[in-house]
Length: 433
Image 1 (spheres, helix red, strand yellow):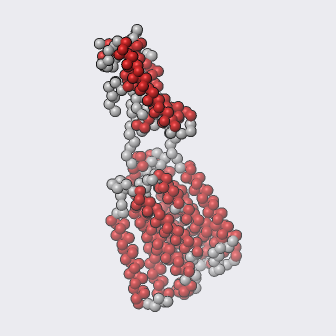
Image 2: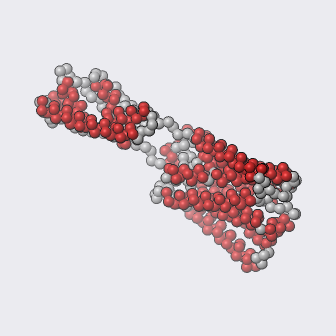
Image 3: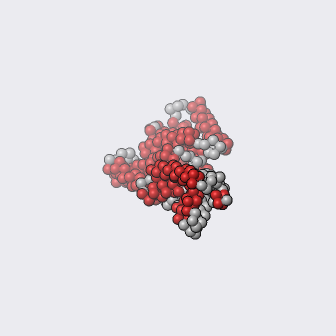
């Protein structure tokens, strides 16, 4: 009767039964201690966290790996069993919430390095000087701005690539954004290559625009070519790491836009090559206008799927903030170069004559400000970077603390110890989770 009253065990209350219970309890405790030591070795360098994990694994009712919460509340109980109940429900120290201070510091460091690189290449070495600008100082300042924004925009691709590789998770990316980006950068690389490397195309451009040379530098082409390679790398990561059924593919609308752009460019090139001499560069200028306009159009629409993706998830997790801040810095520097060149030449047609570069910079700045607002204002209350669990399944609820042991009756210390042994050995009825 007493045995049934203290846990419902079937072992007899005699000395043999108590000895068996004590041995089984000691064996179970040793197994839990081994699990606690193994968990403590993975708990990190902090001695406090290692000790907390070891104690929780040894005295709690289940292994540390099965606990997905940051801790559990302990329920105090009267009597001598209160200390055991408190130890069994020992909570791990809560993990520090993730913040973006590291990303902000990385973005500021990369921005400073980009400006320093631009000053070195353009201002000191004089690489990529524009002879159409008046004065050596203006030429070097314009070249420095060009190389600075090139470095900023070039560096902005890599934090996302590194984060995807580190987390093996691409749920924060929109595939439509990647497709639009790739289409735009391919068109922009062809546009800048023709306007910078072909003297005939530059001469034809100047004849149409009253003698003004196209405002395209070698930094523009270098950025566009690198952007194509980097976007292909991110797209390959998405295709490799996406989870079928969870991370969706390209939408039918985005696929239709891609087919339409490819058909328009191929049709325009085929028509020009069939009706004009290949050396007639003036005939190819409408094709360049189409390429530049396509890049502007892709910039207009490519960020919209990502904005909507963040909004649907109520989170910017997986969308790297360093990427956004560097893109914002690059757009500002690019816009500054366009305005400097126009003012230095006393020719505002540079702004209207090369709309692709101007609108790309302006649109990039506008969308980057939206992403900054999403990260710091709109979804800041949903967690540092993981509103509603970043669009993923909510973590499992923390296991409830084991029920406190009943206070041992007077003169029943042996039976109480046997009850502890039975609970640690798993003889006690399982709690409903």
